[in-house]
Structure formats: C-alpha cells, structure tokens
Length: 443
Image (cartoon, rainbow, N blue to C red; front, top):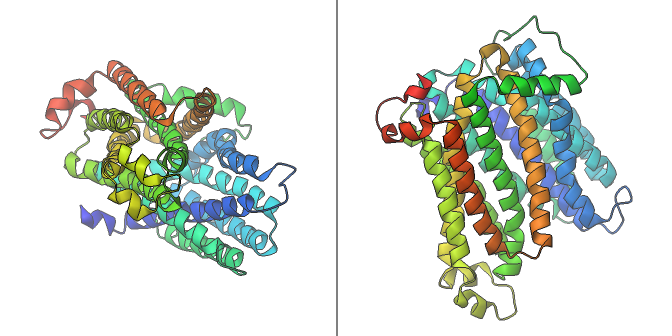
C-alpha cells in the first residue's frame, strides 16, 4: 500500500492536511508560550486563564460554522473548497506574522479564532473526500496515513513552535515566517488535489448555522452504524483531550519529572496514536474491519488501568528527593519504562480504535451527504471535548489523584465499549474474522 502514499490521487491531500496540522500547532504552541511569559493581561484576562481559554477560542468555530462547512463541501467540488480554505489560511498566517512581529498578543488570539474557523471548513473535506480519491480496499490505509500524519504534525508543530519562539530577539518573527511558509505549502499541495464533481450541486446553503446544525445532526443519526461510529470517535477524542491535559501534571507533580520527561510523555502520546493507525492499516489487510476498534478499546482500558496499578514507584519517589528528575534519571529508575510503555500503548490502542470508525463513517454515509455527516461529527466531537475538559476540571477540584482518574478512564471506557457493542452487535460477531474474510457488516 506504500504506492497509495506516493500516488497522485492521495499524496496532495496528505500533504495539505499535514502542513495544516503542522501550522496550527506551531502557531498555538508559540502563542501559549508568549501568553505564559507576558506580564500584561490579554483582553483584561490574566495569562494563566487566557492560556486555558485558548483551547475554547479554537473550538468555538466548530460549533458555529460546522453546519455551513458541511453544506459548502457538499455543494461545491471538494478540491476547490480545499484550495479556498488554504488561501484563507495564507491570509490568516500573514496577519499572524504581523501580530508576532509587533508583539500584539490580542491580535494573535483573534488569529487563533480564524485558524479554528479555517480548520472547521477544511474538516469535512479532509475526510469526506477520501472515498472519492481511493478505492474501497484502500480506505482504511488512507485513513491510517492521514491519522499518522496528523499526529506526527502535531508533535513536530508543538516542538517547533516552542523552539522558534524561544530564540532571542527574532523568535516571534521566525514563528510568523514559519506560519506563512507552511500555509503556502498547504495551498500548493491543495492545488494538486484531483478535480472532483460536487456531491449535491443543487443544495441551497442556509447561512444561519442554528437550523442547519440540527439538520446535520439528524443526518448523522439516519444510519445506526454511522451514528455508533461517530459516538465512538467522539468518545476517544474526549478521553484524548483529558489525557493530554493530565500529562503535564502527571509527569511533573506526580512523578516529579522535569520538562524533558513531560515532553517525552507528550511525544509518546502523539507518536502512539500515529503508530496505532499504521498497525490498524497493517492488520486490516486492505479490508474494512471495524471490529479492530474493539481490540483498540480493550487496549485503552488495559493500559489506563495499568497506569493506575503502576502508581508512583518507590524508586521514582526516592530518586526525586524533592527535585525534578532529569530524563536520564527518570528512565534509569525501575518502574519508569513500565509507565512510558503504558502511555505509548494507551495511545496506540486509541489509533487502532478510531481509524476503523472513521472508515465506517465514510463508507456507510450517503455520498451526497458525506460532508455534512463529517461536519456533524465535528460538532459532536467539539461538544464531547468541551465536556471532557469541564469534567476533568471537576474531578481535579474534588481532590482525586491522577492515578485514580486514570482508573476511572479505564472503567468508563470499558462501559462505553460495551455500549458501543450493544448498539452495534456486528462488532462482536465479526471479531472472529478480524484476520480472515471481509466482515459482513460492510458488505
């Protein structure tokens, strides 16, 4: 399947998405560092609270504009919509570059909203266009490549943004230049996406988002398996955003690790999801096997539960001695490798869980409504992630330890997996055929 990665059909989409995810995270990482170390308030909000609000600023457009984005992608050729979103990204990057050079953090927060808006309109294209570009046998592989590329881009963008903005004197200018360069790369790649016919050219776009949002939610619920897959994807991303929020305090406050240890954990999480996507590609053998998601879900529970059992190894507590452990000191302590492996395998299980579900949404949704179905997924996903952030804040406010929260993750995920299988019985019936013939659920 490596030929798919280099194919004229798929490669432009991959690099369009990769450059966009890379750019988003270069920008966000640099912005968070600027806000954190800025003495003055931003819009009258203290820096610590503003950093927390930045996630909401980026997510809000998904609530406001996903319905419109889905209609736009169904009405006009998706390759042209992709080009339009990338032209928008270039404009936002130029405005952001001006904000970085002039040190106008308020302007950068506005740019963050506009970048979220750009991602909202590109989101339906990113997944709805794949079935039009690849064969059914390549669908899982294509989703795996996109998933892997996205998480590698997130990791590289986060590291790059932090490294560039830290350069004395010229750091902000370097970030601005990188944002413009990556936006131009994305635009160039988008112009190479093959031309396509519109899915529903007669569709009349309703620009008021309220009514259309309810309608796209109804569209996604028409097919039972599509709705089950969407809810499964949203569940994982809710757990994912909570896990990412827990990693810094888990590494620093609970394990007494330094910044390098926290960076390792974030890298393991990002690389793990990408690796899990590629494992899914390998195991699927070119077939659509949504039952692989069951094994991924069981892995999430298993490794989250083992993180609870690992607790704080006595060797790590002794080695810390009231100081933060360097990366070398952490890795040399007994018990550290078990924790690192659990984090990696937890996120790999997540990749194995969501890739088949994305393929099911693409395969089973109606072609003329596919973009709106993906837009519905984006709306629900944003809601789940927002709820997860609020829930995590509440759990921490109740004084629960991080290992206890991880145990709750494991238990809740097992319950969610049971509900998913109950709503979609073919998953469990097909598990015996994971490495055999094509599953009947998608015939």
